[in-house]
Length: 314
Length: 284
Image (cartoon, rainbow over all chains, first blue to last red; front, side):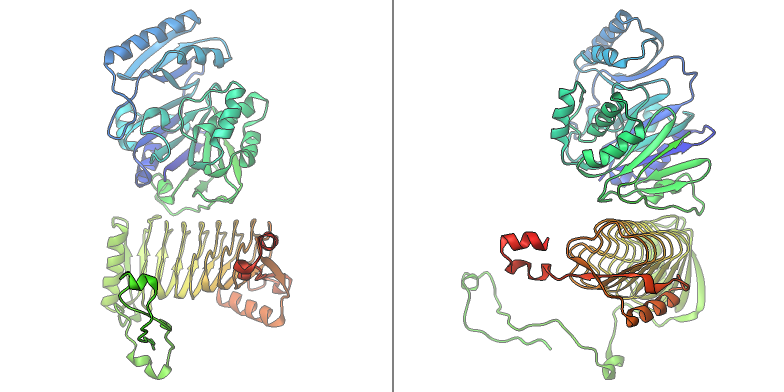
């Protein structure tokens, strides 16, 4: 089933980690195999923040294989050496969990494709996000468990999207969890609720154009699809509007960039979404109770219509 | 009355012991006889006094607890119940088979007021998906917007949304009236079998797709017609009925109903099974 939630503060920052945790926890009955956050934090914008994993969380229902921490250590060493080779300087390093790391990197090149390909050429290593504001955090368990594990409660930022996952068509692991980074674009992330029925056709076509897939989760296609459109010069909104016909199936998805948040709903309107919009806040989720977790007072909400695309700026 | 006959001829399945009884001509259809009205007993209903009013704050209650408490209050004779702080909770007010004035001071989540028969409900907020599903009788008024599958499979009663509604409004409806003050989404009236839908605003694509019967009235623009949905002439009696309904619904009283479009089933799909494959394509 899965649940998605997102919010954007316009003209101010807030504890978006805490707020999104509340929204996603309200949706935990829609799935708690894994939960993911894409948080757009307050930074000085100078350095890249790279969230990456060197292994999997192997819990109940996981399809991944347990590995020794020494394997993770070895992979981390190779990552560090590759960064050095590419002229990227590690400014700050945090190893939140044995398999999950956060680096602040001084890196002056704009094209992240070569950078990402090099890092991800190391078996078992995946960049979860790369950006000057975006941080993707995802792991097994419900929203509160992931929030506590990664200490996201205090993260201050302008906007965020998240996903509570009930795994149906791919494994229970971090690589199949949402949000997906819009590889190789800085600060682009996607969450999705639904099923895409032309996944393989689109995937083959996009791989032939040099795009990369890390999982077999159909939702990853949306991130890659939009990234490819933007690579070819389309704006985010144009890419999203094209996706209504380019992607087949039922879907509601959110996409976020450094300064914007967007939603798209398929032409069948088969997947739910409730939306609240005011001058200083937009909040949306699969169910109204997600919005109620941050706005308990009586508010006006509505369901976007079929085939609707909306984008908001911070 | 049921008409159970003894039939000696057995089918192959019966000969194999797969069925232990033989039914023929049996019906569950019952006809209402006003002379017997007093003999009718609706299990789980209460005598309530509409002037006996109380508030119920459900902020810290689960949906099941809230619904049980509504039932408990009705058993005490309360005929008017005001629900405070519903806060978008799912499945509130379901299964009320009683006369009751029920007022929600706030919004409901999914499946609110499902399978009800008789209550008069006012929701001073919005509702999520599948509001009033399977409504059999009564009236449900939503002051703001509603989600998708609004009034799915209703059999009777009036369901009114003063704002806009999502997709598949009135899907599979078998009776009753749905009135929308704003716009409606895609597949409105999908596979409806009876009843009427009134939309004062615009409506999305595939209106009345595969409808068997019933009528849809639209005041605004139509995204597209669904399979077997066709225009029909808006008669004077239609207009009179629309004016009366809109007045009762406290919605669009000054709306010019004479310009509304009337959509009905083309009924080509009715004979679908009898058509040749090439004819089926034409019907679709």
